[in-house]
Image (cartoon, rainbow, N blue to C red):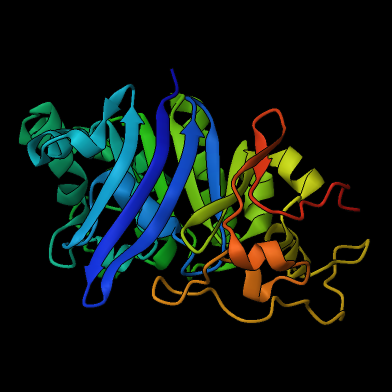
Length: 328
């Protein structure tokens, strides 16, 4: 049984002109010890998927389909049950640590709060475990006392505190929503290496949300490319990068900066994907990518393509699937 199995997940919002579908038939799979990458431009549905997994959708939105964690469907669980699972069974690292942390509460108390709530530890026991958790993410108490406040730390250090909070109770699933946003390149690499070490050490499952294909290539076992609330290509990361069957996947890859043989960035102008991701109010009737795709035909304007199997757990939703391999 998969650790996390998402089947036909839809998220809808009632608006003045009807029902708007924000996520449309999303299917994802995550096993223990694996990292699943969600990639796509802003507005493609990555963070909305994360919020649906955690049961934290904004008021007024409703989800249907299924989100199974060890066989338990979270979409049918009461809020009391979700509160028991959040932090204990699954945890989330948000993309902006300064808003995820309480600015007037010391970091030791923030890391220890979940330990007291979920594990019933005493204050002394929770402080001991908080010290261990912070040390594990590179914040030893000798240099970073439990009484420090978030504003006394750098951006990378605050992100480490958020990771320590998420890991304190030993969850099985960690959802990291662009955990390296606004961090410099060196700190980004450190945070990603830390997450990879922790997943391997504790045999957890990681859902890594990012717009950086380089991070996906280096970090994830499987990946899903999202566009306009749908998964348009997914599969083992090496297979998706080898084939890049969907035009959107190829467009994202082409927009990455290129480097010369000595590692220096070239001066070649970056490729761009024309247009922008349509919002839920203005999505075309057919394929959601049709207005930005250079391969669109009449059928693309009329029908929504379904996922087509291309290999072992690799698929793409396109009427004009690229059959060749990308020259890398």
